[in-house]
Length: 370
Image (tube, rainbow, N blue to C red; front, side, top):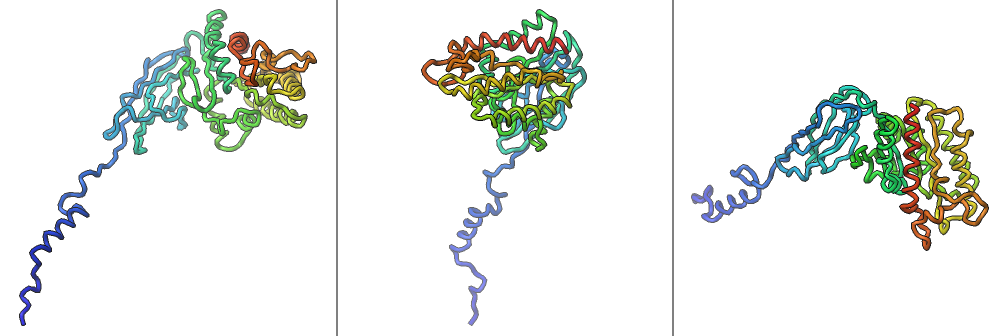
């Protein structure tokens, strides 16, 4: 018997197979039409002005960057001010930033742009910086919340500008709070972060920052040292809760080790700022006495003599009640308490408005002596 249907197809079978092929694999159609390949963004930025002096805050604008898939608002940029391979800011959708160069020369700045798919593009531009209006001295103040209030409510930037006008100095004042919001430039704009490891600016954190050999500490330290000639740093009020003589001895050991490093960098000046005092309702007489002893030691000849690039601003003494033997001796002054009913140790506006100008004068006098 001849099987005439051996190579034949059932009339409904072939169209069904074709439909399955097209639906599952996109056969004959070039593949699914909804798949797109992400392409890298194109980086572009401007610098205004193209030339300036050490007193100029250059304005960088990366809003000209584009991407085929993402809108400009979603693109993120970061900046490397000297094209040294280490980015000085973190990625942000804010495309503008200001930067002041503290030494004369021609600098290549680099910007990297990143899209939502993680692809990046980079580009560079050069700026020429000359000495002018006096060579600006870059000052950095590392702090946390008490320091931020002091800078803002105490108008440290305004006070330093007045100092410049009165004494002919040129001070570029930067400050760094927690890693977020991070670093603020001389114009008072948040421009990134030094990403201090662990966000730790307690005494042990500073010990690691100035003496640690781990790569993360070295990278952070070198960034700071490369960008600033005068560096002030303080811990916040929890560091004044010194619960034992052994803890006080440890603080002193850490700060002596820091001083050993400072001795190797006589091209930089370091301002050790003593921690502010605790509120009387959050304190203990023994803690307060040890905090006073620590602050006194930091400002003493025992710590400073023979180390001309190391200075101490005694913030503890500026905010604290005198060591008068009373139950509240060495605590936050009553008139500086934010509240008399709870133990929040943040000083109030009066404290900041009083001490801010004194801190600015102290910094200005150091710069004047350079």
